[in-house]
Length: 340
Image 1: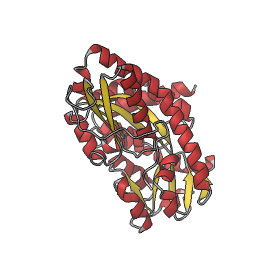
Image 2: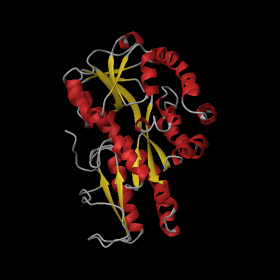
Image 3: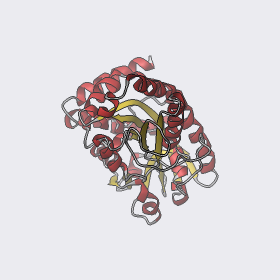
Image 4: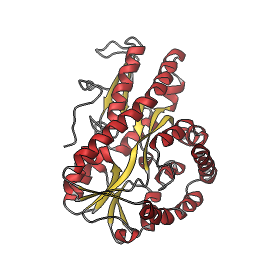
């Protein structure tokens, strides 16, 4: 259920161990690990495979990268810790696994913050000073440097009863990532949020430990959540934003030519990653619609949720680090400017 053939690579990269200048059978001068939070066939994993192949080709074999799917080097928290320590060099990390470490990053959990237009959201992620300068600085205090932020698509809800109004969430046990701000967002709707690792979520839904969850469409289909849920609600209440990160010390100590190759590949992958999530989300929606009832919220229905979500921004400003208000205020200005 969790394993799919890669879309951009015809074969999985071989398993290997890490960080050394040489000493592997590949004969590469630089051997790096790249961790992801998803499985083959999902956005993060396919992004990482394509990223690795481009960088290996650019370097003419000087760089050899091993890509790990979710669980290959532990859970999401383990992987973030490995990136901070430098035992892993590259990774894709979601703010939901790092929000307790970098509370300012919990702004990605705010509902109805980014535009409904996914392409416009990606443009903001590419250019935002709030994210690419000030939030990056916060991560670098912990040894990780975000080189790019990218959307994996709009978030939707799945459930065994229709979710179309805030009252439908009253007492509803929804699985969330371990994030105080995500908890607050759902408590605003009257829900009972429950933190759970996604590796346990399928069985949790199947056994009724939790009643529903949120994720981009491609991930709902890939992980099979729709198989144990009767409804998917197209709410577009948030965007799932992931970060391409490197260990800061590792990045700063790279030879200038290797660092330039890495930076160039990050830029190339912006459009590749966007196209990939679009392709996967469109294909998954068709698959889900074949055996699951899909509900689409009207703008009036979405507004009821938006009205309840807005006060959470003040909670974020007051509780998520000394620079939270400055970062969110600037980001909101950038979003408004991009819309106009």
